[in-house]
Amino acid sequence: DFDGAKFVVRLGGAVFMHGALPIAGDAMGCFVLPWLRDSQGNIETCDNLMEWMKQLDQFRERQLCGWKDYSNMPSHNECWATCGGYANTTEAGKRFGDLMQYGMATLPDRSKSFSCVYNSWMDDGLPRDDLFGDSSTKAQLSSLFDHEGVQLIATGHQPIGDFPWPIRLGKNKYVLPCDTSFSGETMWTAHDGSSPRVNLGKGLSSSGRGDVAYCEPVIQLNPVSEKVEALMLHGVLSDGTSYDCLQEYDSNHESEILVGERLDVDFSESNGTKRSFWVKTKVNNKLLASCGKGFNVWNVMV
Image (cartoon, rainbow, N blue to C red; front, side, top):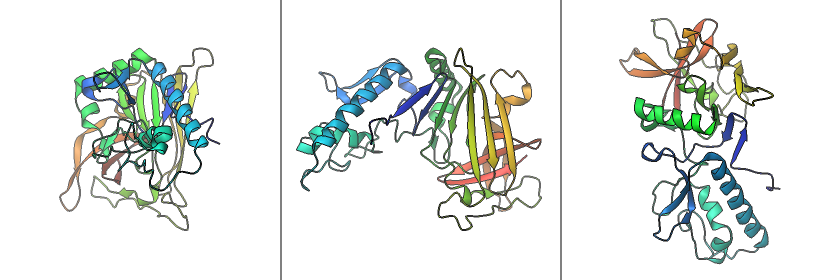
């Protein structure tokens, strides 16, 4: 039963989706509706989050109705990403092909699909440079959060190690990728010549997460204003270290400012490789920082 399924869920100041907002630095305030085209053939957009979510819900409902009504799709009625696309003219495509395309990473011509299912806040293992690497673009995204009343967007989609990867946009605003499904493959390094911690591995687990690592983010909302008051994360890292972290949204402590930001220094491994690390949280008076390349993630305690 898919009737209750949604692409995006909002609870007060917190928003949840699988991927990322389908936005780019040059169109920060536009929420893309790729299944709709104007008279000139341009993709239609809307200019606020709630209207975009409403359009997504209506789109999902229409397409699911078409899918339910069409139970005997002939094999030649192809509407997959490599041979479908939006406005597919096969009978199946006309009924529900747009919904299938929205769940794809690319269009038939291999160009990027503007979808909150497959868009990502990460690029090659690190927070996207086009959104978070430039202070001006980062400020625009922060302003978009303010305009829409959003304080936190929690997502999945791409593995980010054994702990969620907070990306700080400013005071009280974070993006939080949470896909820890490959925790059992997280690697540990050291910055001070000491022996690195050791991942306890996958054990007997059938998933990439392993037997040990897990994380539960808990978002505390104000019962009246529905604003995010605190983000709590508790669980166990891949080396067996337990943690219970609290990110208070009304905190003014200077020590909190590193969480969700890139460290000013790169660490060199024994083979000379330099890696750029981002601070994820504090564990037992130390900073847990991570670096990624592709789906490989390295942790370090500083």
